[in-house]
Structure formats: structure tokens, C-alpha cells
Image (cartoon, rainbow, N blue to C red; front, side):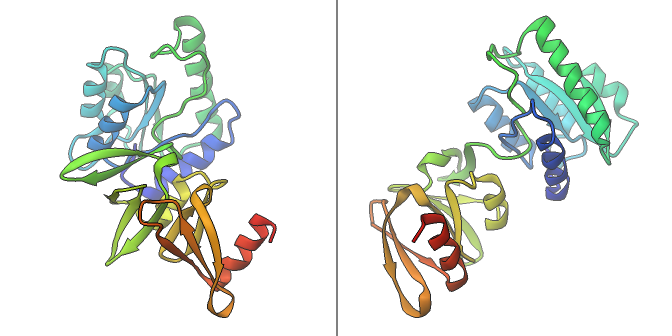
Length: 244
């Protein structure tokens, strides 16, 4: 969890270089992180300390109150919080900018803890890094509530009047992510940036209709049989992906 996207992106890249790690989620705020933690089993969390709202230290206290808290590693630019970090049962404390060798040592440390004590939530393999990178649920909002929308339920994402929405079969949800951030989070083998304002789930496309000047219109499998545009530049990529 880190409120700065570049910092999350960098950590996601470094973790992607470690074979044992599966990067499956991220959060930008403590409230978003808590919603994810309460909804999905997590083994290991990387938390920043200085955050808007609850700090990483305060969030760690909330996590420790859970029946089976995951392991926590702090990632921060400040060295003065190290003692407080270990007071809330942190496994390790990494300073930014993160050195790849130091990060690998942290992962080895967690692996050893898992071998000795088991996974915090009873998972049967060490394959979870849970708050930085891609996850299969996207936090969104509807009716004043935070909803975790499963990737498999997202038919397309789009911008409308400077806001970004997720469209499912019969609902739409507001999300605070940009389309660029969603593109980085969603499974790239399934989701395709077909237009500057749209990302589509290719598994939910029912028809491909040729349109003006080499573009396409995609008819998708939501309740309304919505039509999603494909720009001319992206139409070439789509043809290659589909073998057209």
C-alpha cells in the first residue's frame, strides 16, 4: 500500500523479478487496503508509513486485530519509524529507494517464517504478495459503499466527463483509478485498451463490426448489448490479437 503510484509501480517491477512472488493487488489508501484485506486472504503486505488518513503504522494495528493477520513489511523513505514498526510486529523495514538485493533478502526472510510457522491464513503455497500490483478485484463505489468488483465481472471500463466507470452485466461502478492505472492492474491477456476512453474484456465481446476508416465497433455481452469503439490505431493491434 502506497499513495504514490510511481512508488507502487517501482515496487511492483522489483517484485516481478522474484520468481516466488505473485503480484496480485495494490491499494492507495488505508481504507481501500482494509476493504481488500477483509475480503481476500493475504499472506504478505508491503505498507508505506506516511499516508493520507490512517498511517501505515495505524493500519498495521488494525491488521494485527484480525483473527489471522498477514505478515507486514514496511516500505518508507523515513528511517525514524523503524522501532515503532517492529512494535506493531513488522517482519522487516525497507528504505526507499529499494535495493533489489535487500528486497530479495526480505522475501527469503518471509519464506523462512512461513516454513517455520506456516502461512498466516492457512494458504498451501507461498504465492501471495497482496497490496502492490495486479489483483483480481477492483475497488469501486456505488451508493456510497465500496464494492470489490471481480475482474471476471468487468465487461468494459470507460471514461465519462472526467470520471472512470466499470461496467458489469447490469450495473456500473465509479472508480477513482485512471484508465491508465486500470490498464496496469487488469489482466493484460484478457483486457485490451481499445480506445483512449475504453478498456474492454475480450472474453465478453460478442460481435466485431467494421466501422468507418478502418475502425471497429465491439458489441459486448452486457444487459444492454453496449457498443464499444475501437480506434484506428488499436484496430491493427486487435486484428493481430484475434488473428484476423
